[in-house]
Image 1: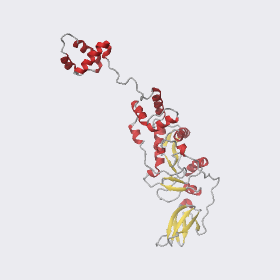
Image 2 (image 1 turned 180 degrees about the vertical axis):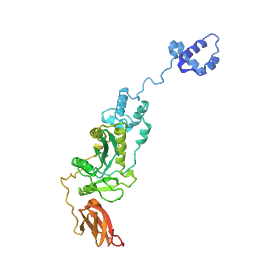
Image 3 (image 1 turned 180 degrees about the horizontal axis):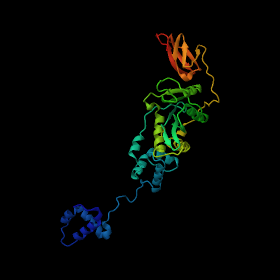
Image 4 (image 1 turned 120 degrees about the horizontal axis):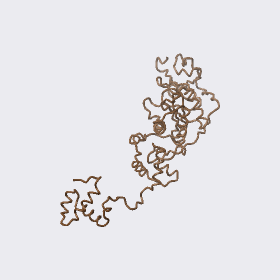
Amino acid sequence: MPWNAKDTMNLREEFVLLARQEGANRRELCRRFGISPQTAYKWLTRHEQHGRDGLSDRSRRPASSPRLTPAELESTVIALRLQHPCWGGRKLSRRLQDLGHPCLAPSTITNILHRHGLIDPQASEAAQPWQRFEHSAPNDLWQMDFKGYFQTSEGVCHPLTVLDDHSRFNLGIRACADQRHQTVQEQLSRIFERYGLPVRINTDNGSPWGASRQPGQLTELAIWLIRLGIRLSFSRPYHPQTNGKDERFHRSLKAEVLNGRSFHSLQQAQEAFDRWRHVYNQHRPHEALQMATPTTRYRVSPRSYPTQLPDIEYGPDDTVVVVKWFGEVNFRGGRYKLSNPLRGQPVAIRPSPNDDGLFHVFFAHHKLMEIDLREPDTGA
């Protein structure tokens, strides 16, 4: 019968003593002890050479292994992983190089993490990258959104995040008490003062930047951004991948900062955001950037944040009308609905160069709608 691992040494010694007796039938002993003749010969030889100590198991590890990771470096890998528990082999490999340590292959690091029980299958699945398009230069496009909300001891926190599309550089994570446009405008003003203005900002269609129930309607925040010369675009409803880089950033923020954490106040949450933002931008290798850090790819915008909003100017061929109280304009006998927050603002009605009777309505550079006088009953 098989040997009980707990009594292995005793059984081996018993077998050897019985097998060495005069007239012993060794093959029959092998059958009864459940071992092969080759194994029996091995134990007899070892006992003859080393006595009882020769019956203990020997390590199968080679005497020397030039490919074995040094213990000190393995400890460094483990410490770095514990410091950044959501980083995988590729990020840790690059970070070790940046810190001046010998190069370790990502697969080697992954093996170390597996050996020490530091791989979470669910986290590995969540870390799978999204496929996405990348703009060619910093500040060509920023992505902006709220990362939901969570409760602190003193109230609700709404994390506002702004990300540069090209570099993945995080321009700000702000712990906001609400999602009102005044709050977002205040936080964006601080970001603009430091990093300048982007060419375009993409958001979803929800408040405070969009009007989910009336797509195309401008909010007060959107009007302010347009006045600054920033182009706006909005994600397709129920298609978060349109703002995919910020969505992926939110996954990292949740995994590395928010999961399992609680905060006493907005201030405490902001301090945690600031610490992680420093790591994310300057230390955390990014796989989509060939393991570079976002800071190495980002440059501040040459477009400075103005101290006051510039005047709105239109062309000589434009018909300029002022939006009425209910967000409406009158044009050639028709009444057309725009956005309520535009009341009192001048808009331009511009004839299409190719279609007689077709007009485009603009607020500054932003196209609001088309008026087609070729179709009957186009008025509101």
